[in-house]
Length: 272
Ligand SMILES: [Zn+2]
Image 1 (tube, rainbow, N blue to C red):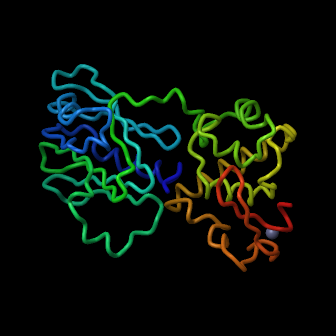
Image 2: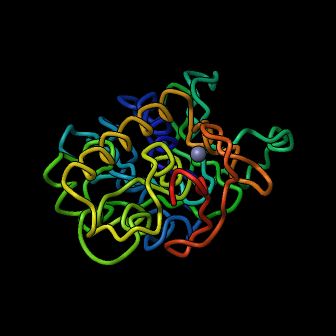
């Protein structure tokens, strides 16, 4: 499932679609394009251009201009559980292809066109597509960003202390709560807590200021690394999240449980 690093990589792919004149939008998938009716997104975008690609947590959106150069609506894009952004260059040449953090599977090469849920065509012959087998991604105008907490890669020290370091919920649940801070998913949370040697069950409100500052530092570093390496699956502890495996740092058995209603793995010695 795409987390902040995968979505940031997708946003970078989306940038290849900027400043190209839109000639057509296939927005006929009423589920992916809800609450819009077919043709509504097309009507808002055709003749105009995407001008900037932004991201907050796992949500992306583009600024747009209309055909006469006025500010257009924001175009929101969410990858859901496994969507990818694909952008082709002039005359359809390949420019960008982004996986949702999961290694590309062989059978996806035989791509069915129906897995392109939304297609934006440009006057140079290229296109932007949301490729999504599971159909859980979403494209919509004017996405609501207010419910999302600050982006996990950018949240400041004081804000992190105030938002994360409170309450009786386990720290892992706090990190996963998109209204507290946005972008952290299950794997990035496990990687961060392992890197920080923190017990995922520990109530967030018990952390000292120094511990919160350290946790933020570790989270930002783990996020940055995952962006550079292409996804959260590249984290150091991720491949050890399995039965009969050991901590790659100290050799103690890895332990499994449910925290924040998600399957969680931690080092039985260092995170107890
Ligand atoms: Zn360990």
